[in-house]
Length: 160
Image (cartoon, rainbow, N blue to C red; front, side):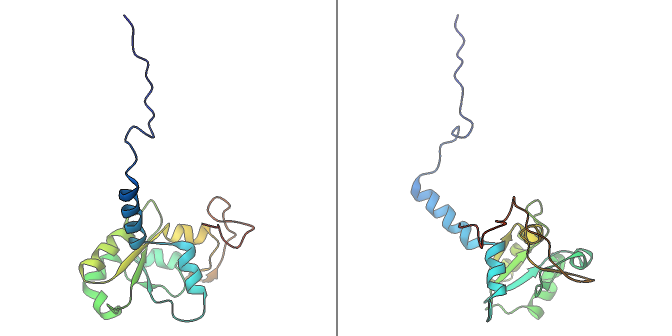
């Protein structure tokens, strides 16, 4: 009796979506997400960015470090304070700690449920710091060298 030794390719175990389905999915993803380096580039340019950056973490986390110019509004306070602090005509970009945290997603959901246009910044504060962008702490401004695993070290941008 022969035993089948067919190896299943784990990547293709579930077939890729059709090109049309993939285009719809990835197009929608871009409507919901912003990239750290894109946010930094716009904030670093002259003029109004056209959006508000919102840090949804606790006060202790905010004090530990945050994006300069960001608005601090912990997720739990969004329902009671968003209307006082935000303009519904200006899109909001939320962030939290990093890719292992869904706080920015929860903040984006809370804002969307209140009628705000919102995107989530992929990578959060972790990737902001790891890509070498300036941040503020309760002691002042800081900047760390870019992490070569997350940002180009000797190029102006990653080319993507």
